[in-house]
Image (cartoon, rainbow, N blue to C red):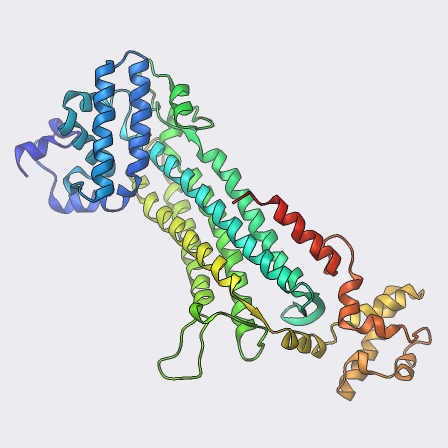
Length: 465
């Protein structure tokens, strides 16, 4: 390294020898943190504006900084910016280029701040924008599910517990369960955003600064909702990134559960749905195969996001106050979590829009598992029997139907009346799949009128496109 290059490092005057190339590669983050460049420029311009307003730097320096940053932004956007490993990270690369462009004004930009509060600010600004994109993608996925539910409002499939046929539900009702999950994910993201959107800048290295900074003015310029009130905490904690990763993990877990059902339902064994060909792949050896690679891969990527959450928690758990170099390791898992969640939400919204439902296969499956047995028990309760007695009677009826190889609804009335004399001709309305579904009119139930209301209510709750 030349003497000039050696001096380009922010701390170089103290050191008697240059950093080794191995250490340079090991400690550098510019290859991955350069995606923070917009946030870095945004934060620096707000900081510079405040410094000028406070009389800490002259107005001409602010003008030079603004001019230089505009050129740097243009260079980065056009691909002409020269990112240097020697300068370690996005922050020093931009500052060095600014100083090259505008001279001493660029050197004055760092007055009253440290890279510790600078990077914490940049990550928060970047993550805030990504959360907004994720919120929009969650809304898109909910809309796709609502459309699918509405198109198949009256399709009936078996609802499962323990993966055993339990009770019939409408396909629309089943899709609404995922709409609710993703709605809660959106709520969590909005809640996380409020804590992400707080300003560390002004904490400097760890103790604050002796310059008369107006932190509130910077927060207002950056549209942040408040300040990180303690300088030590502001630069040292990454709980906002951990909290986001936890919310992202839950969203991916919901995607993974949906994926598991799509894989099962699209198999020849179930045959409930067809995934559009553009979201599937073939086999290199078996020409009949159509593999649901997108939902399968989403299940796998969920494990990846869960791993990032565990990694971030582990990264933070042993650190003393205040900033430690360990925190450089927060970015790659955070970046990958954001990228994975965004890509997955985007592709799932498109894939769910192209799902085709096989109503006949669904209803046939619902008839195989005595899905209306609970309806028969409820019928007997309404005739005056205690539920536990009704439960026992229906168990004997199901056993008889199993032995005869038929559904409860296919047993003749005299056979059903052998189990209890209160059973009448009206029992067949209760034992039909449609009757079972439509009987559940309670709010949150699977009756068509309730599902239609739920679809309308959830549509109304989504933000306008």
